[in-house]
Image 1 (cartoon, rainbow, N blue to C red):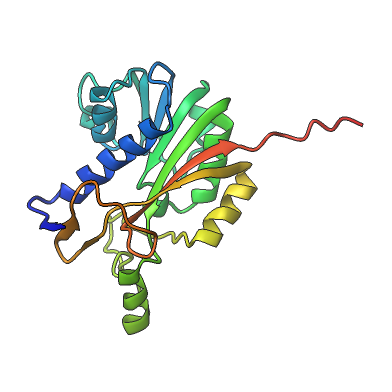
Image 2: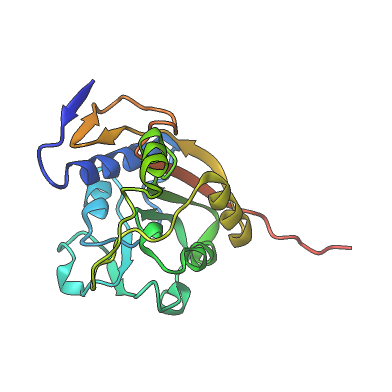
Length: 223
């Protein structure tokens, strides 16, 4: 049921695979335009490409040279804390992914609104965030008054600074003109151990939260 995480990126790779499975389970079209917000070096985009998705674009603060070659159709270097995403990107997308990014940002609500602005009316946004309310985090809050996934940063670090309990997430989505149409369950991970692939657990245990979001139809204003 559980196994040891043998390499430093084991949990991250698992999150990426589970997110791709979550997207494919929705029947998302593989030929649409995709934007990966907070794409890092392109590891998630690489996995999506290997899973049949083609037209993938990325945005992050890293220099273009840090991105894996031949993975992204285009890349925009954007500081999501300082710049507005739609000021740098003028296209609309069928699918937007934002994996383990919002919790690092100073203005996550603004990025949610930006993704809504860049989404085609029929498109979907897929977001993953750390689960700050699973049993392990609840124990950490009870015993220490803090989450062990949100630690004091050293100068130059970009760790987790934004918490998203379910009601806060719902409120931010409402403000951004988005709604959750599907929420995924995930694996449990603690102290170097992770549940086996295929074992999906409720939010009480899950290490990460998966959201499929759709745009809320704008009021036509008709009399």
